[in-house]
Image (cartoon, rainbow, N blue to C red; front, side):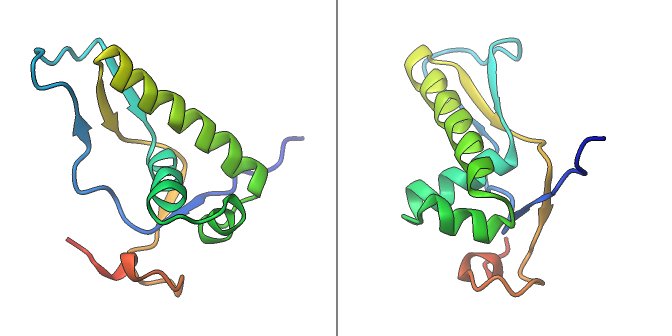
Length: 112
């Protein structure tokens, strides 16, 4: 029997969920889809400078899970940038914190 899914804690949804090249027409068939939990690992590790261990604590998942999510997220970012593909952030297996949980992250309280 498989282990039950452990939802990844995310502090808030991104302000913008679609990104892409300005000089090309958007093509819905040629998009890179990044999940919200992948976005959260990029935010925590690359923007906030947290280690994978701290990221795992914030998201309430194992460090090895963070590592896999982070690798996938970086590949998707690279694909979007290098190949000029649109990037859309949506979906994933997460639960939204929204500042209601005591996570110690000021980002949670900056709701828009």
